[in-house]
Length: 259
Image 1 (cartoon, one colour):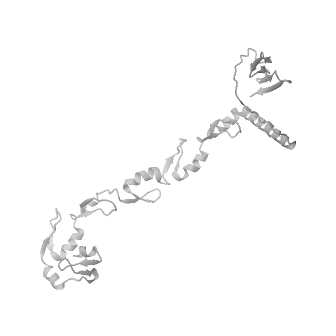
Image 2: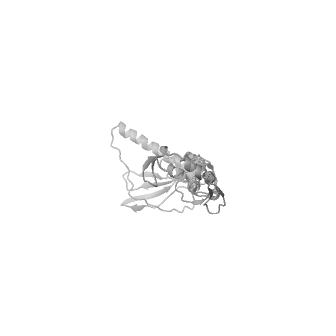
Image 3: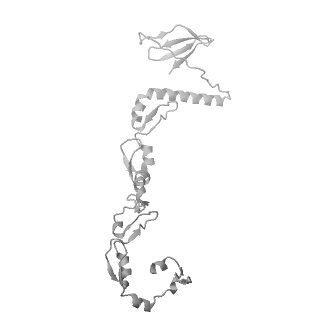
């Protein structure tokens, strides 16, 4: 009767079907006195308890053989009370040791390996660093294995941070040439703006490649003339490891260094 009364605020008498509130429920003193010494036994499977009716409720509250459902939300496991402590419920909520967030047991491992902000993880760029997941993005900006395009305008090589100093030394000549060309272009722009001259933008329509075999590299050399796109050209070698192209068909010879 007590268990039945606890399930709802408004009760329905199983005998006369009248409704009443559980606050109105009172023990029938005469009936209780008449039945309290009745001999009863526990109905739970495997339990051998026997005693008086007055002690039955106290026994049921502690009987190890009473079958009950796991109290965790979403779990349908039913077992004897004495076996429930061995039940590693997948729905049990456990505090993550890293961030203290409450997570169900079945999702705890995934949370630790993929979501927990304080779990230690290895750098995804494989530099060997181990740090909390919350600091990964900050680390990637400084990671020696992180790669980026060379900051010198026009130089498109991708270099890792750990190799940047070596790259600056090895590519210093190319960097100087590119930066010198950039300075010349800026000076040209300033000159054109100063005198209101419409700048002429060079356009590359195609690229021609060729190979020279130079038997005596320390002496100046020049190639025979060749024609490309109705223009006569020749190649020049200064003897100082510098190559030039010379336009012969122009009214005035035009010579440009090849970089």
